[in-house]
Each structure stands twice: as structure tokens, then as C-alpha cells.
Image (tube, rainbow, N blue to C red; front, side):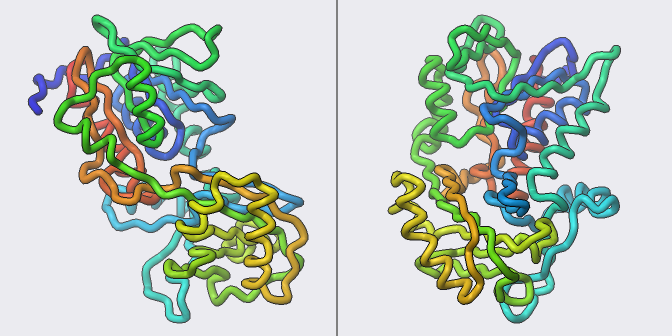
Amino acid sequence: MSHPTPAGPNPDKRALVIGAGLSGLIAARELGRAGRRVLVIDKGRSVGGRLATRRIDGAVLDHGAQFFTTRSDELTSEIEPWLADGLVQEWCRGFGPTPDGYPRYCVRGGMNQLAKRIAADFEGLVVDGEPLVTIATGQRVDSITAEDDSFTLTYEDAAQAPTQGSSVVVTAPVPQALDLFDRGGLVIDAQINEGIRNLRYHAVVGLLAVVGSTPDLGPAGARQTPDDPDFTFVANNESKGISPVPAVTFHAAHALSSKLFEKEDDEIAEILVPKAQAVLGSTPITSYQVKKWRYAGPTEPWPDRTAVITEQPGLVVMAGDAFGGAKVEGAYLSGRAAAARLLAWTD
């Protein structure tokens, strides 16, 4: 796929980023640092996506991403200031009886604080007294349409005025993104259309449990058991250092999550709470909530960090943890790659 010669940043051309999870925030930040104007749009009440933290009865629980690792030079360099000011801290070096020597990092106050920190960095991106990057939450995009020289976003709230931009980065899960393209009549590049439509995700059902005492979950206060039929990950958020009281996040196995996903929360709890109590032994569950992630992660990631959906009249680029590698680091690198694709393009 050929590209015109880059013409340098044009702050009068606005990029639109759909999704304020890690990929979307990193893409917006990199575009803003390069002098581009960016609008980030998210359906949620706040930024973060699966960098998600919940408070229950005085407890703090991560219920999406639980930790992250660093294998790339980019993310390793990124976290240095986060470590220095205490935002990020090393949790452990493995969840088995013998540490593997590789750091797992968590975030003080919960993973959502990392998203808020990145969003706060936007405040320093200003030209002529105006912010380069702005965020609009609580807004559900309904469609993306290609016009003569721009793209138009419409919203589920029909009273909301459409939004125009010269390029679009879409970090929503692929099935949701395809709905936006199809409703707007956006023609997807033929080279990737079939493959992108066949990309699949696994669902995860979580149980968030406040408990009466610190449970025995091993040296790290967590268990990672991919082959367990009930829970593939169990973590005491107190042991991570983010909760003032014992509170355990249970992630149900993929097969069990798929079986339970369409049930009501109380039905799910009837099944998961006894299983969780069996893991905890004599440690009592005092309160709990159910959390569902329909698109928790790709069953097999897209081979590249991004996918260019169209080049007419500008770029529409897909990014996220489904592209080039899952988990937190994959989302981070995909966001950077999406920004790089836009910056190498002439609006």
C-alpha cells in the first residue's frame, strides 16, 4: 500500500480517536506531541477502557487488566518516570512458587489511575492557548462516513451534532468498529476486509469479592492457572498494594465465561460465589459484584500493530490490543503505531 510524501504536522486538521482506553490515549498523546489537534471520544463515563478499577465497601479492585509487563524498549522507557514518582510499582516476579525474575507491574490506586495520568498529560499540549487534545466521554458513536474531504461521525443520540475530522483512529473492539463502518457505508480496503471480519475475541466474566481476612493465595497474593476450568486468575488487591482491605478479583476461565456470559448477574453469582469460596477456604466473602467483559481479548491477534481500513479521503486506522499482540503492552504499542501511521500521511 503506497503512501504520499509526508507533509509535516498541520494543527488545523483534526484527528478523531474513538476509544479512550490505553491505545486511544497513547495515539492521541503522540499526535498531540507532534502538533496535531485531536478529539478523543469514548462511550464510557471516564477514560481507561479495560484499565478498570472499582471501589466496593472501602475496597479497591482492578477488574480488567491486572498488571503489565515490559518487553519493548518503548514501554520500558515510558515507565521510568512512572516508577520514579510512585505511580507504577513492581508487584511480583511471577505467580508460582518460584519467581521467574520478570517484573509484573501494577498501579498505585488501581490500573485506571494509569489512564488518568496519561490523560492528564494532555493538559501540557497547548498551542496559542488552546489544547491540542480534548476528550469527550459519555458519547456513543453510531457511524463513520467518508465525505468529499473528511470523515463524519454520527452519534446514537440523534440530537447530538455530527463531528468532522480529517482522519480517524478506531480503538473500539473490532466487532463494534465494523458496525460503525457498515452503518456509515465505509468501504473497507479489500486486502484486509475478510481477515478483519474473521477476528474473534474471548469473553471474561469476573467476580469482585470483598473478603473478611487476607486469603492464602501464595507469595504474590495471586494465582495464575491457565488450565483451571473455573478461574484462570485470582488476585488479592490488598497484596498488590492497591486496596486498604482484602479484596479478591476472580477471572473465570474462557469456557466458563462463555457459558455464563448471557445470564443475569445474580444467576452468575449463584454459580461463581461457591467456586470462589472454595478457593478462599475459611476466608469469608462479605460482599461481591459481577463484571463482564464481552471483548476481553483476541483469540488470535491481527499480525500487524494497526490495520488501515481506508485511505480515502484520509486514513481510518484500527488499533488496540487485538493488533500485533494482546495485553497492556500490545495496546500501548498499537496506539503508538497508529499515531505513526497518521503522522506519515498527508492530510
